[in-house]
Amino acid sequence: MSIEHLAFLIPGNYPDTAPGVGLAATLDVLAWAEAQGYDSAWVRQRHLERGISSAATFLAAATQRTQRIGLGAAVIQMGYENPWRLAEDLATVDVLSGGRLQVGLSAGPPPYGALLGPRLLDGDPAAIDFSHERINRLRDNLRGHWLDDGTVQVDSAAGAQRARLNPQAPGLADRLWVGGGSLRSAEWAGRAGYHLLIGNVTKGEQSDDFYVAQRAQLALYHRVWAEQLPGRRPRVALGRVIVPTDSADTATRARYRQFAQGRVARTLQPNGERRTLFPRDLVGSADQILSALHDDPLLPLVTELRLELPYDFALDEYRQILHDARQLIAPQLGWRPVVQAAGTPATAAPVARAVYTHRVTGV
Image (cartoon, helix red, strand yellow):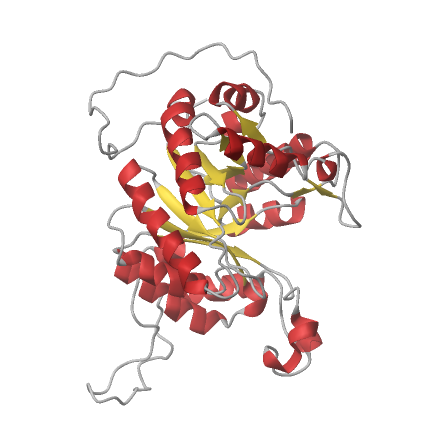
């Protein structure tokens, strides 16, 4: 087991009456996590919720608050997006960040398209291509090819120019990820050459066991990638809900456990027509969480781990979770920060792996 890249995913929630408070607090977490040595910070893009509805806009602000940490969006649902306009926004953010942007994407019709109707959709939704091809269109735009054969000029105050997407963001087209949660999405991502995000939700297509189903998807992804792109190495990032309690006070620990207990029922069987599967959240001491992680059959197959932070936690709770995970859990999984956090000896000796026998309880 060797985790080389430590990341986290934060929802960016806020109170209805004070959205600026929650968004500013999330920016504070990103800046703080950079100082702690985290390799990347990802934000959820959610529509019609108290969260980040425009990942590109939010991450543009994050580029001005950070210098090193990777900045990611997971995931942008392409059914809500115009592939050209989104490409312009993402390219702008990547240029502002100095090439630090990572973009997670998903295909399919917008989940609330019927509710939004003409507010979102121009014309009959049945005539709109919401397939994976919409993701390919975004990638093609980001590659910045000329849009003409040299015979068409764009007139501007700066003079006539050939037409292509601006600004140019070299390499961004190769930093696109697909959110995998089914055999179909995993196969398509591998065949099309996208990196893969797998997390805390998956589809039970061949098994009622979350880990068996997810491992089958990952195996398919690697097999198809190797067939299509021999010699190239894909990136796979694994997401898990990890909430260490070591430095939390008694009341906070109780609240964390209550949060996890409220989500146990969904882990006991496939949910809904899509047979959605969930694993149990990892809430407990670092020793308990490490024991559970060492039993996770997916973890030895990846080198990138992403902590999926719960919704509606306070700023100091996110910091506590990230602090404990960075100090007590990640080093035991083989991770070492490229940048040392303030107060951490630059030549700290590796921590010997302990034998963990405890199980996460109360979840």
